[in-house]
Length: 368
Image (cartoon, rainbow, N blue to C red; front, side, top):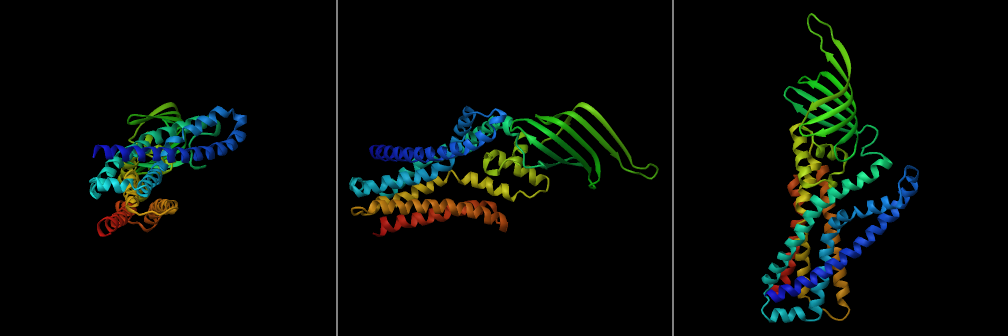
């Protein structure tokens, strides 16, 4: 069995690597062409060819994260179909390779691809994305969601805060920050504006501060207003770098832990976290799609090919993999619109295709 695993793993790994490199080269070529436009637009600000090439290179982990499951599918289908066409897999079956042993061997290999995909999506891609933003930020401006910036909300004891951040460098530096403080009745108490702010553990350090207070009227005093200017001010808060980045970045660019922290922050502040919950569970299940792809590929080893049939079957398998990716995206959008349960919304495509694959495997192996 060790020799069989070495044969299958070697063939599949080489095929997956070949497909992934081919797709990656194509995607990077598109990125280079796209960056040529940025190069001409930002040349006056000092954006040069080396910046563009480094920016494109930092997109590699994100592309690999997106491409790895489909590369696993195409590579494994090709290997399984080729082994079936050359009768090598028939020889392996005659030598004692039981169907469930073959499935188990592929799933063990799939766990390696799952680990690689998880690492790329949770560590390599988010880190590279932020480094890429750091390269472009000095030339095109910092992270922002438009003229109004990003809004965050936080509760602290008997006060609520609405925080507006216009720009963020992706690490810990912010510009044009406004903090609105309200009491438990929703009455405005204070507006703090700062030209710059840095995020530290458990607090924000504001600089260039203008602090405006509003004392609410009472029975014997009218409402009073006061304003002071300070060089710096410390604001204690639980809003972290990840939460600010989450408000400015697309959810699919965040790591699993960032999504988990941010959706808990939204829920704790009575805000709708449906979109981020769905994306969180998608992040959890997406690496597992590598297992689904290998299960999809295994029935091809039990087909009987005539001359010229292999290309058609491989193409059909690729279409099945593409339809899985499309269904995964469609379920995400529809689940968000229809307010479906996030866990089931994200798990449904993988469960559907795994069921179909195992049914095809059972039909070909056990019934035929």
